[in-house]
Length: 581
Image (cartoon, rainbow, N blue to C red; front, top):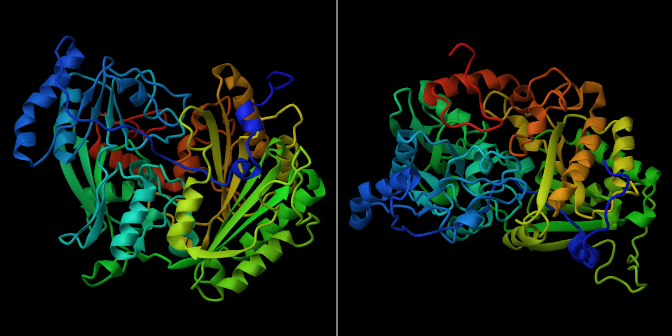
């Protein structure tokens, strides 16, 4: 690691304090759309692509289904489609196949299987690892043009296609029926991977994970004879179909087939009125945004803030309390950013909402000697907003749009990024706080786009048994996402070094990773990190699969054996077939 980091980019130095407060994080979506194109079969890849378009041309003309574009290197769209939202990961596929329907997905997979092409699957593009874009991929199957959201009366459930972006899903569900799913805050994430990995957000403590409301899934699979078929598995399915549904409730994307549709209906929902079948979206919420200027935060104040955070979340981890309606994220930005930020939201119509929020803020700031006066800008002028913001009441949809679009750092597709995650069942230890303080205040590290986001968890999440869904972490109080962003490939070693040094020091007692125990509970598969499978980085002797899936991994492997026995759908942290299969 270099002794000293280069100076921050000018665009980050000149950014206003409001822009620099990076509250947000995300987990799955950018991509481009396109229409069908005619290709000259000048190569085997082009011939296979042309065959797809030819064989399904009649379907498109009849209007029953359309055929997605086949994008090769000569196409102006190819450059954009060979990477996602993390510029570290780039593919050079023979072609990118845009999918428009389940039938179209079948044809695309058959073409790839017939020609022996290795495929990857993208619904959006926000994957934190190289699952979609890596040098081995020969065909990217891209579902970003499948964006419909509608009520399906035959299923008595809301259908959501995998390419729909989170903000669009929220808008359509809310405006159409006044309902929602408790999903993430990053507006541009595609729902395909977000849902398959579990999905969580600011409504999760009140309503559980997104997959807790998943009723059915439509999946295109490849069997042992390379036969391609589409299956619909529901919450009520038994046997192998039941396992296929279950595997998509936290088993991660790109493991079993291509998801072409999700349906949502909350457990126990009855009747045929769509507005009664899913989480009722809040009408209005109370929001609070606090910033803590780094020039007023010494190690004592930092420890007090985090100790207070620990205590509140340990006390209010259970579901069914007034406090379970409140969710907060604490953005522990590096000192180079200028401030720490905490954003908190609660349904304004929840029991004692005002009191719960006031007591939460009081508990977190108790004994913290940080001035509430406006923070002086480096020039001596005051920034446009004060250090502490008054609590406001706004419509839920307005808050969702504001929070989702507030942070350009995490949605910048030209950035390179590194991400690591951990669930916590108890608060940070004193040793972990020492590591966090040292690494977040390192003087030789001057990148303001570096942060540990600490996100409230627990509540209704913890009301579900850990084997009821593939997402096994059902006893946590908060989770962290450690992340940093940069532009220059030449600086990869420095930033990856800082990231690894920080994370591995926090979990030094368990081989550098959060091995499930009394304090921590492994990692989140929607924040995938291939270091967890590297013995040089994961020195615990515990396999990466246990960190992400705990005791649910064996069932996921059996499901893999049943539905993808040739391991056709795989990636760097893919579910593995059982030994001896």
